[in-house]
Image 1 (cartoon, rainbow, N blue to C red):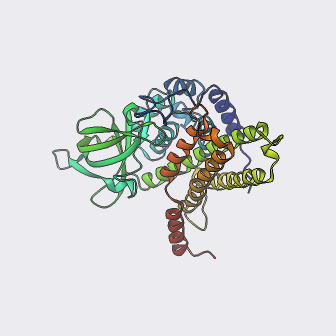
Image 2: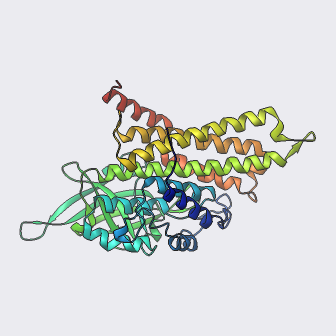
Image 3: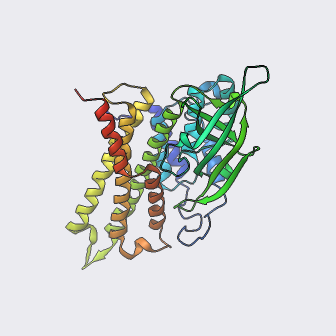
Length: 383
């Protein structure tokens, strides 16, 4: 497989490296020492720098003021953000913006996307459903209202989405819902709106999340995207972006471990020269390369719409299997090779461990993805 990136994609990486080079992973209190959230909202100064560097408009079409790049470019930038634990809703906001321009009404896109590209409007998305285990679209019902003259008016939403990242700081929350006919739709709900209640939640990484409860929330028809496949496409993009975050975090942790093992001495020699240490580090390098290959396969399928023996969901499932298992193995090995420093709250590794656990929980267990992949293989026999 050829994973050579275009000049535009490589330029996006360089811009991302320049922005994220000034980010300190320990700029907020440690989640291990904080009972509540580590901060009230995401990193607004970093968000402003991303906007100034045109990275928030990276995947937005030129007609809305963006560069018009694809999900691969987004994943490349996400990879860089995770190396420094960038505390911004870059994945959620960018993914929802792409769904709006791909499936939404042109009027809605013109209304929202230019402001999103400038960083003035922030999207987030409820992708966890009521419990985090059931399909997210089944947690909320959506029914059409009559406009009073027998025609169709707006929509009414009822239900709960849990674990919505940075919902208290977002301007619009993308809420998947199901209709009476069983179709999935995507509603872009203003955060401040009649019938919406946000209950405080805290992620494993210490970030501020929310349970979003919708009680007869009335939304104009324009703000509800009903195009076939919108939620399925957005769900796959969010999962693939999460895999990119896991890859970047893992690469950052392995680099940190390599630097530590190269200078930490035992018996007069750097521990990096010990065979047991080298073998463990090599195993984790192999994990990262597998995570990378499966990530770009999934991102390429989403970006190009290329057909395959299995639907794109199959490639996403494989990427999720490797990311979920791989990121856990990388941080566990790093903790082990760092010894006591791995648990020292004055050293940043424990923060990466907390973020890795949050990503692993977001992706879900590898066994579930293996089962989903098995179902796809049964439904689409190879050869």
